[in-house]
Length: 231
Length: 231
DNA sequence: AGCCTGCTGTCAGATAGTGGCAGCAGCGAT
DNA sequence: ATCGCTGCTGCCACTATCTGACAGCAGGCT
Image 1 (spheres, each protein chain N blue to C red):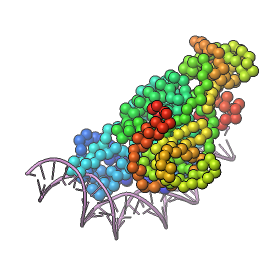
Image 2 (image 1 turned 180 degrees about the horizontal axis):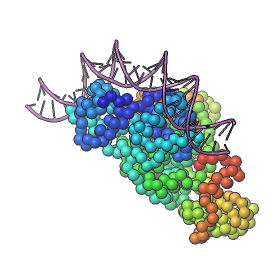
Image 3 (image 1 turned 120 degrees about the horizontal axis):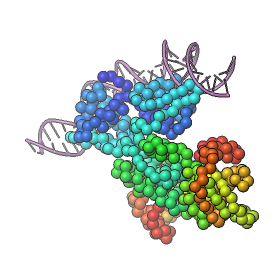
Image 4 (image 1 turned 180 degrees about the vertical axis):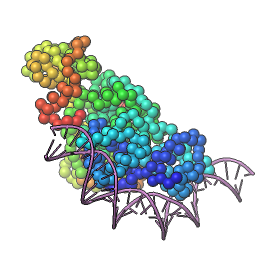
């Protein structure tokens, strides 16, 4: 990847936008296809032009969010990705989230210049039929409980057909090809448990907040699963 | 005023933003301290990077508003939908489209108010592992051909193991659980055909444009499939 | 102390940027 | 139609900017 400096600076800006956590200069240098020395020069250039990039020794660089520097418009690839993603959500997720996908895309479309708006309407990336396994569970309720870190009461039928009632701390929802799985801390078992949403007999949200942060639970669960990191 | 090109491009963008009415290239050249010839090169560079600058002979240049994304408001549901959709694309699609999904989300995040930006980072809707069936086919190339309505030359191995070479008019790409399917008009068979991307031996893009609009082909294909409408 | 990382200086060679000129094309006014 | 204004592209030689490598210092974390 050998691109001119003037273009590279904008690429670098986007790479920085992409990472939210500190990134090392070496990594940025690799991504922009340039030596470490040159990367330092590039960073200095961006800072001189007003970009608020913080660099801390031993950590890396972070782009302070909330400041707009070009290129801010979406590329064709990005539009296609947004459209395809929204279509998948619209087909796969529960009705409320599906509506959210459609609405979000519509909002994005309104701020697009005409030619890109055209891309949204005419994109021909299609999503295959969903093999939804419907349960009585209200996914909207579950997502809301996850966001608000509220305890849920589940009536659940496990894979052996045994019915149990549990209080759980919900913190993630996994979307697989045909099933949706709630990941939660189970008060009954005092451990992480997975619950297929189609096996939930009933779901009740309490007003009670569980005592830990869902990000922390997610991190610990990932470690038990041997999943390194990332969404 | 003699500044480096990389910085000058950003200055030029600011100058363009300042004017609302058309500005002549000569004036822009003077303001950025550069010859007219070079200014034309600068404008070309900005356009190549996605800036929507319109230049009309006899009038001048105008920066199409909308190059910058305005601050946007989304509901929590909409944010979750966007994040989930992007994560799915990032896991499922080809590397370029996957990067597009991540980049698009990053751009959206920068124009979000802080509390919603938080939502993007902490969303705990997860996507299961992709069961990607990789082929040698370059999906990026295929998508580009679809967008530009270019004829593709395929070396394809059908389900019986027979190898054929065909010229096709690609107009849609279907994402299923484990396979990606190109939908195209096949010149050989004079009919619509589906091609699994993992069975493509080679894909070559021609510069030749096929004689019909892809939207029309899509509509006709849908009718033959008995698919009513909608994406 | 040791490791990782940010940051600066220097230098010679590679690269890209630059202006001037010439020519074509589209638009509006005369 | 003609003219003037403007956008746009090709060409070419000159220049300066950019680049990588090496070397060294500073600051945070374990």
